[in-house]
Length: 183
Length: 106
Image (cartoon, rainbow over all chains, first blue to last red; front, side, top):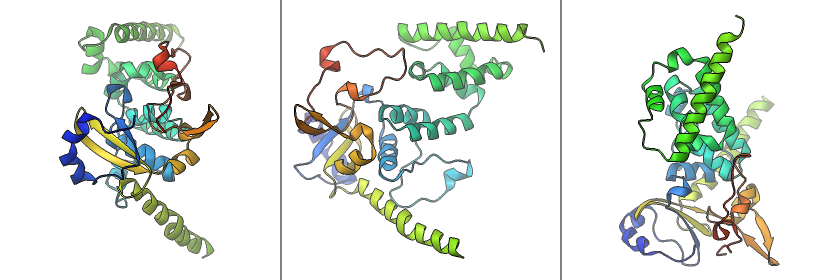
């Protein structure tokens, strides 16, 4: 974890433009692998939240245009921020993300995220999208995202394919139950 | 009236100070830990922080005693025991190298 890897030297041009060299005795933590599942804006929001309890997730559409102080983090991908909040054990931020994710739901987004392989690990999210999908099935079934999920067009791992198949089974089961229920 | 005074005080003290404080995340001259985000060898950005602040405000970064030495865990590449399983279906890695107590570098 310590020490400067070879790649560091190659990136030094960009590095000095962005920030300048850090002191030598400082610990350096790298986020450069797919399993880290984090980008710069997400990490900035996470650290900002730990420092002062704020993140840049606007409560309203107009909120995106709101002016912030210098150095305020950019608007993150809320789904990724949610995953990072979980990883960093930040329940308040997790709830904040969940609220944001709930507010911005559309049939397309619900399908896309429910069938995202990462969704499998988070029951709260899965339930949110699942319930939305079932409640708005008439609209959902007309979307390209739904078609893609059904036809398995994406290049996904066998585990992700099993997760999708399970979801489709659960969705059909729930829809069938709803259809049988008295109006 | 009193509320207005309080609000002004709040904005001028806590809020502005906090923002100034948080801006230090972008200041390469401060902090004792640097977070480097890269895509392959391409640098996407750096953030600078104080371990003590992170540890004080967040369990993930908190101190933990190991081998009678206090270590401060920072970043993702720490013992996975500190990472809460996402839910009951989550399976912990069985690879000792992944699941074990790999000593953080601090």
